[in-house]
Image 1 (cartoon, rainbow, N blue to C red):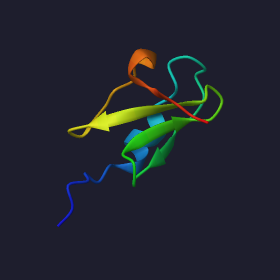
Image 2: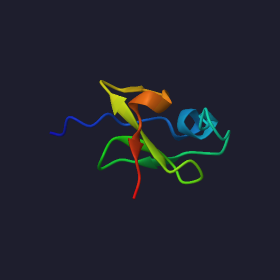
Image 3: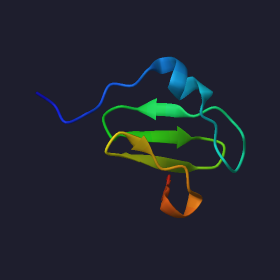
Length: 60
């Protein structure tokens, strides 16, 4: 059994980057929502997307 939470795709599609308003890409392996336009990965902790730029990881 995995600790990863399965998400409703429609819910994920409704989320946008708070900085760019662009659609986010769900990375199931890392439990992150990726904003390619902002170069950020927003973490998902305990099933809750953390949509704060200060909490996001900078992408290379």
